[in-house]
Length: 383
Image (cartoon, rainbow, N blue to C red; front, side, top):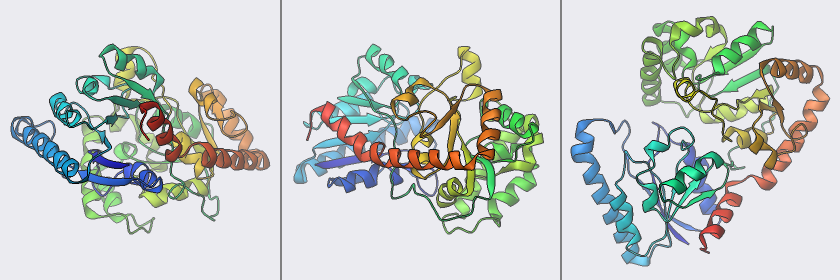
């Protein structure tokens, strides 16, 4: 197919979609017309954006699609958009060209209000959350459920020494700091990296860590990323990030580090005896507002096993559809169960190795983005 691929999910220096969606579509033999429509640091919340920039960028998007369609024809318009970025009428104009439209949005479990206006304008909406399916139907949209996946060219094992016992690479919000604190108090050597964890450190140390990265050698880190991270960590320390202020997790400063460059993130799966995951989803403020714990299958649930990690994550029922729990990945029910399982598998490396290999084989066989696209296209009725 000839696919117009409109993506607006960039962080400075790249995006996870470049290591998942795009290469998978190319691997499948499709011609992909890529359209990166947002500049770095675009202020989607500013008055200027809504008054001038948003209308102009919507106009340009329609023109680009029409130009590509008139040139050779477009078989599918595939996007990652939300209400802040496009108008429903923009998508309707694209559909009026006779082009099937599909939108993907990862945060529809806890942030559906940010997608509900444009969703009915698309022919189909791809959701990775079963809980979001009725929300789409309620507003008149057509959801297709397919879980996340990973791309084996990027998520893979490395021949490295396992020099960490327990690690977690990801954002520090919600229940995560509390769980990590209990693991640490249990005498287990755990290390964490990512946005939010450094807010327990003095700002001068945050900035120094973000710009030096002396403990990791990588060509994928640059000044723009350092500025971006320093701003986020500064905000998190003084204002509060994900419902948690810096002073609340100062006791974790000795085990925390800044976000890792992509290659180092993947290598950490090979350097860790246990790679930790969490079943909770969304910021702590959302949990408090809703009065319940949000849960959803995540990218990490497929990226870690595909990288041949021993993956230990919070139990959610949907995982039973994708893995043999206890054989291919291991799940915990609560923090006490988590600590018990960490201690057990650190003491039984042979069993941990069996889980690593089984999860690795399962992920490469069944959980690639190619498999997901095949399912989506079949349900859309397009070849």
